[in-house]
Picture 1: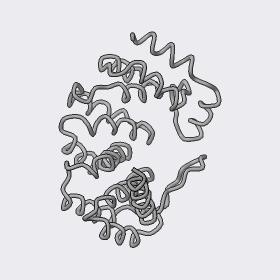
Picture 2 (picture 1 turned 180 degrees about the vertical axis):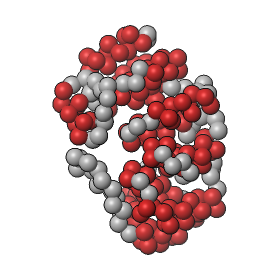
Picture 3 (picture 1 turned 90 degrees about the horizontal axis):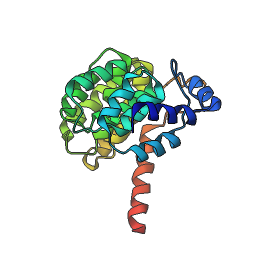
Picture 4 (picture 1 turned 180 degrees about the horizontal axis):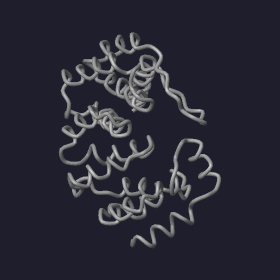
Amino acid sequence: MKKTEAIRELKAMGTAQTRKVYAQNGIRGDVYGVSCANLGKLAKKIKHDHQLAEQLWATGNHDARVLATMIADPQQITARTLDTWVRDVDHHDIAAAFSGVARRARGAKARTKKWIAARDEWKCTTGWDMLTGLAESDIFTDDELQDYIEVIEHSIHDSKNRVKYSMNNAVIAIGLRPKLRKTVIAAAKRIGKVEVDHGMTGCKTPDAASYIAKTVEYRKKKAGKR
């Protein structure tokens, strides 16, 4: 699919209602207002097309950039592209979408560590989102993740708004590692309630300790049914 065709389809799928919802969620700039479901359908139709992904990201349009992260090939994405894209991240939705492809690219571990240490809210958010996605893989050791739990415990309440939310998600993901579960749940209880401003949305920040327990129980039941 060519860029002009992809943009035409995105514009056709955009709605005023979705643009309104996105605006309430803090998304600014050029937005068509395409639902996540329709973006997924279009991505499934395109499949992997890395050249198109780079062209779509360069438009600066929110929907086009989310689609770009869905069709980009992690094996083709270069270090230069990753560093360029992360500088463009300006919202937690884009941070989450971009982290999905960035954590599957070469050098993911090094970039996760680098971006977590960044002062910029969105770069740091992306780093924690990547760690969340990698927490149950073997890329990070239990000892390395234990160190991050200590970092979170000592800094989460003083961190920037969306960084706090992504840190909290990282606590949950790390807590699903069997060897770390008890330690992480204890840390989560010491951390307590994490205050995040979700703007004009109904979103809430989950309690990490209870969310870990619920997820573990759900997985046990699911495994039992199998």
